[in-house]
Length: 457
Image 1 (cartoon, rainbow, N blue to C red):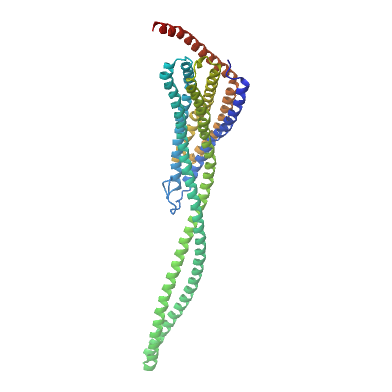
Image 2 (cartoon, rainbow, N blue to C red):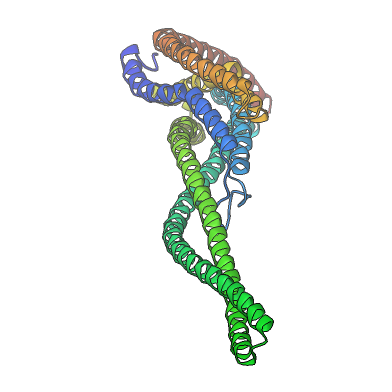
C-alpha cells in the first residue's frame, strides 16, 4: 500500500514552497528593519521635540518627547523579538513530536479493540488537539506583540504629522507677526527720531531762555523779566513733556525689539521642530514599511498553523473517530488509505512548519536578537559622540551581512526540504507499513485468545 506518490507530493510541495519563498524574502528584510530602527533612535536623540498635546494618547506615553516614545517603541520591539524567538522555538519542538503522536494514534486505532479505543485513543487524540491549539496560541501571541508595536508606531506617526502641521501653521503666523513687528519697529524708530529731535530742540530752547532770563535779571528790566520768565516756564513744560515722550518712544521701541527677538526665537524653534519632525517622519515611514514585512513573517506562520497543520490534524482525528464505528475497520483497505493519507498530510504539514520555525529560531538566535540588543549601545551614546557614528555604521554593516547570510540559509533549507520529499515519502510508507504489520499481528494474536475466552465462558 502506498499512501501517495512522489509526483503528487512534489505538486503539493510546490504550492507550499511558494509560500516559504515569500516568507523567506520577508525574513531577509528583518535585519534591515533593525538597522532602520537604529537610525530612528539616533535621529530622535539628535533632534528631540514635543508632540502636539491636543490629541489624547492611547499607546504612546509621552507628549513631551519624541525620543522617549521612540525608546518605548524600541522596548516593545525588543519584547516582540524575544517573544518570537521563544514561541517559535516551542512551536518547532511541538511540531517535532507530532509525527510520533500521529504514529501512536494509528497504532492504537489499528489494534481494532474497542476497549483500547475507548480508553487510550481519546487521550492520545486530545494530546494532538492540545498541541495544535498551543501552537496556534503561541503564534498568535507573537502577532499580538508585533501588533502592539505597530499600534505604537502608527500613533507616533499620526502625532508627528499633527505636530508638523501645527508647527507649520505656527511658523506661518509667526512670519506674519514678524512682518507686523518690523513695521511697528520702523514706526517706533520714526517716533523715536522725532521725539529725540523735539527733545533736543526744547533742550536748546530752555537753555537759551535761561540765558535770556539771567540777562534780563541782570539788567533789572521788570517787563523783560516777566516775559522771559513766562517763556521759560512754558518751555520747561514742553521740555518735560518731550522727555516723557522720549521715554515712551524708547519703551515702545524696546518692547517691539523684544517682541521681534521672541518671534525670531519662536520662528527658529518652529523651523527646527519642522526639520526634526520631517526627519522623524521619514525614519518612521521606513520603519513602518519594514515592520509590515516583519509582521508578515509571523502572519504566514499563523496562517500555516490554522489552515494547514490544524486542518490536516483535524481531518486525521475526525477520520480516526469516524472509522471506529465501522465493523472490522482495521481490515478495510479503504479505511487504511483514509487514515494513512490524512496521517501523512498531517506529518508533512508538521515537517513544513518545523522547517519554518527552525529557520527563524536559527536566524533569530544568531543574528536578530544580537542586533536588536546592540541598539542599546546606540541609545546610551550622545549623538555628537564620534562613537555614535561608529556604532551606527557597525550596526548597518552587520545587518546587511545578516541579510546575505539569512538568504543563503533560507535557500539551503528550501533545497534540503524539496530534495528530501521522496525520502520522506518512502520513510512514511515504511513506518505506516510497520504499523500495519504490528497491528495485524496483534489482531491475529488476540483473535484466538478472544475465542478461547468465549468458549470458556
